[in-house]
Each structure stands twice: as structure tokens, then as C-alpha cells.
Length: 164
Image 1 (tube, rainbow, N blue to C red):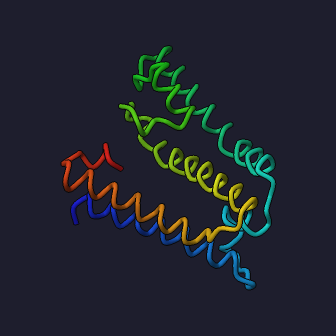
Image 2: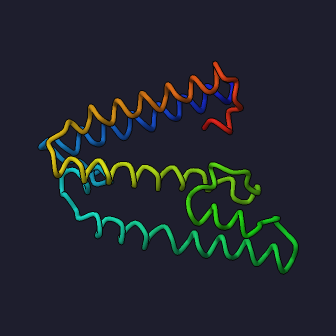
């Protein structure tokens, strides 16, 4: 299977997982899988401050340590080719939008995770102030994202890695 089809299937699977987690988290029954982001934001209505303190305390220390260790390895031993520019993008979760050294290739998934935290927390904030159908909104956003990827890949001919 070509890589682009695998990537599209992974994207669709991720979106389906997120949507079903939100839906199951809103139902009366609660299984272990619903104690995730959706449950915290849409059922428990955890304060966004507490939500971000928890997220930052989990993800940031390891990321900062890794990035600074790679910078040190680059400047002390000449390995990995990490620049201050690369470190900035890794630490601001924007590494997906720029060329990056091979040692930072895996950070793309953390960037997407952090972007989803921001997007879902904004939706949670909005849903706490006005009644909205969260599942429908997420479905529309997911479909828009998929269509954007399809358009950029198939019609504009952009490279898989630049699109996804």
C-alpha cells in the first residue's frame, strides 16, 4: 500500500477514535477508554487552567530535556545537526511546518497532539458558554481536514510529508 494511502487511513482512524471517544464520554456508561481528553473537557468540565497545567507537566519536561540534549550533542560532539532554529520549532510545536533534522522526525506526533489539545480546549470553552453539538462540530472539522489533505495531495500535487 502506498505511503499516502496509509497516512490517510491513519488520519481517518485517528479522527474516528476521537469522535467515538467524545460520543462515548457523553453517554451515561463510562468505560476505561473514555477517561481521556474528551472526558476531561466535555464531561468533567475540568478547568482549562488545570487541564493545561497537567498537560504541560507531563509533556514539556521530557521534550525540553530531549531538545536541549540534542542541542548539546550537536554543539559538543557535532552530531545530529540541530540548530537553535530547529530547537525553537520543536519547543513551540511548530516543527511540522519547517524542515527539521532527522533526530526530530518523531516530534510531529507530539505537535499534532498539542494542536488537538488547543483546538479541543477552545471547543470546550465555547461549548461551556453556548450549547453546541460537539460531535457534529468535530465531524465537520475532521471532514474539512481530510478534504484539505486530499485536495493538497491529489489536486495540487504536494508531497505527502509537506501535506501531512
